[in-house]
Length: 195
Image 1: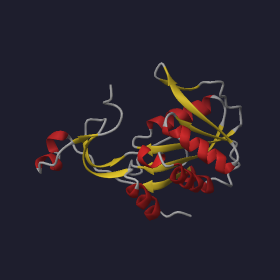
Image 2: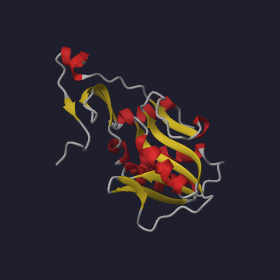
Image 3: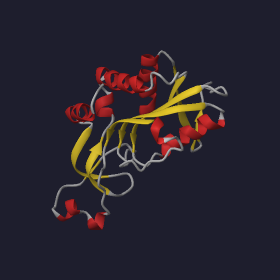
Image 4: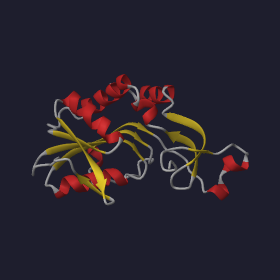
C-alpha cells in the first residue's frame, strides 16, 4: 500500500504538485497548485496510482468504474482494468453532467466513482447524481488528491471515500495575498484561460 508521503513524493517528482504563486480559476491566489496532467501523462505512474485506488475498493464488488471527463476518463479506465470491471465516463451536455455515447447504469449496478483532483467536490457530486438518477448503487469514491481540506461533500458516506493524498491548500483574496505583498510573480495555470 502506498503511503501519502509516497504519493506526494511521486506527484512532486512529476511536477504535479507545484509551489509558487498561482492564480486559481476562482480568482483566488494560492502558494500551491496541482497540475494533474503532469503525472497522468506518464502511463506507468497513472497505472501505479490507479492500482492503489483499486486496491482500496477491491472488496466492494465493483461492477463499473466511472469518472467525469477529462482526467476521470483515464482514472476510470486504469482502475477498471485493475479491478477487472467496465469503465465509463460522464461528460457535460448543455452544461449538465450526463452519460452519453450509449453508456448506461442499470438499477442496482455497483459503481465506483473516481476523480483526479477535488477542490469543492462539485464534479463528483454531479456524477453521484447521475448514478443515483439511474438507480445505481454507489460503493465508493476514489480520489487521487483531495485538496479541499476534507470539506468537499458528495452525498456519499465518509467511510466510502478514499483519497491517496490529502492537501489543505491555502487561498487568498488578491487584496490580502501575502505572496503579492512579497512581490512574488503570479502565474496563471490550468486550461480555463486558453482560447
